[in-house]
Length: 165
Image (cartoon, rainbow, N blue to C red):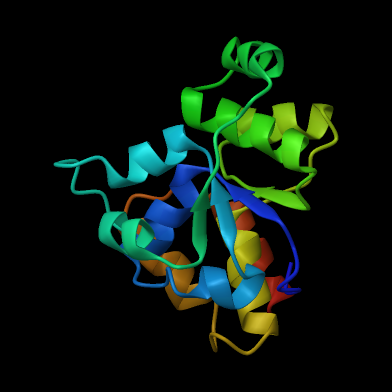
C-alpha cells in the first residue's frame, strides 16, 4: 500500500482504533488519501459520539467522502453487513479501489468472496514498521489491546515473529 497513488477506501474501525492510539497520521503517510463513504464518515464524526479520531478525520485533508451510486450492489452487501462496511465495499467496487482498509471478519470475508483486496489495521502497522514510520509493532499492538481492539494471541505472536520483535 505504500504507493501514494493507491486508491484506498476505509471502514470506520481501523481509523477509530488508530486514532485511539494516536497513530492516525500513519494513514496518509502510508496510503496517501483515503476515500470514505458517508456512513463511515458519519460513524466516525457523528456529533456527540466522542469517537477517537472524530476531529482528525473531520478536518483531514487526506480524507475524501464519496457517496455510493450502485444501489443494487449496496442492497446486496447490506443484507450481510452493517451500513459502513456495505458502503465501503460498494464504493471500492465502483471506484476500482486498490484495497479496502477493514478489520471486521465478516466484512473481510465478503470482500474476499467479491475479489476485493483488504488490508487490516495490523497489516498497516507492519507496513509502517517496514517503511520506518514506527520502530516496533509490539507496543502499538499492546496499545490497541488496551483501547479495546481484539487481537488473538496467535496473531499477536505471529506478527511479533514476522517483525522480529
